[in-house]
Amino acid sequence: MKKLVAKVISVHAGSNDDLSKEEQQTIQVELDGIVGDRHRSHVRETWPGDKQPEGTKRRNERQWSAVSVEEYNPPCHDMGKQLADKYTTRSGGELASTAFPKAAKLTRGLVGVVEVAGTISAGDEVTVELYETPSWLVRAPD
Image (cartoon, rainbow, N blue to C red; front, side, top):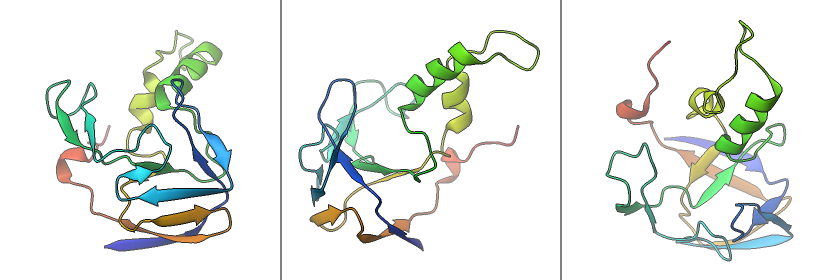
């Protein structure tokens, strides 16, 4: 199992309908996720594209997400709409709003579950344990 050690630059949490997160001084994390965050739970319903039928309750493997300070981080579908409005394809055609989410799949930041409850603040050092990606999730070469 590979481990990453990183410095926390900022922490954010929120339960807004638009999925925005407010910057916090400190967040409290419990085994079911970040206290006060809309993604806090041991379970979630499936999304389109999950292995199980839509609406199925399954394990929540996205209790938190992290990106580098260099990464622009709205949800992939929002980013896809912004890019499609701004750019065209190489041949000059219309860019589909789904192009970015498809290209970014499994490449933007990290998501995971909380293994140890506690507090996380800007400036803290954190350790992230990376698990081997299951073969069914590996993208085939283009």
